[in-house]
Amino acid sequence: MVVRPDHPLVRARALAELRDAQWLLPSMESSVTRGLHRAFRGARLPAPHCAMTCQTLTGTETIAAHTDLVAAIPLEVHQARAAATGLRRLALAEPIEGPRVAILRWADARPTPASADLEEAFVQAAHAMAKGSARGKAARTLATK
Image 1 (cartoon, one colour):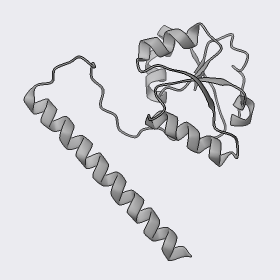
Image 2 (cartoon, helix red, strand yellow):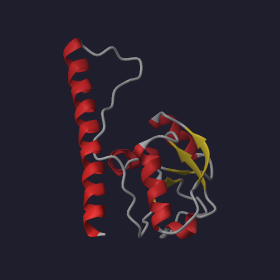
Image 3 (tube, helix red, strand yellow):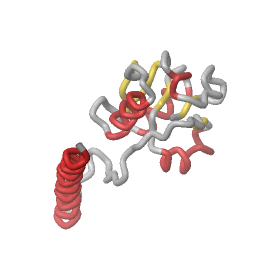
């Protein structure tokens, strides 16, 4: 979670302090957004209010740098670009689980046949792993009841 350096919430240390914040999210379906929603539920807070979505990193950084929106971007991305953007990471006490693996490419890029096959294999493997995790979690839940 990042904000501009002079943002009113730059010193927030808990999700509860962000209860009334307006959020800039990559999309409502993104793994970043899902992780944020899980964190708010875990803190027994109402879902964060998404005021705007932006699916590009440079757009997100630009909007966050010039508004009071709190932006949700992956930590690794922020760490790599913090010096260039000037955005400040909120040191929140609650963990916010985001994506563990991501495939990044330009939206209009035309991958080679080999890279397209590899990307599809990664996506299929991720879906299979997610389904297996969900089944495993359900089985573990039933076993503990």
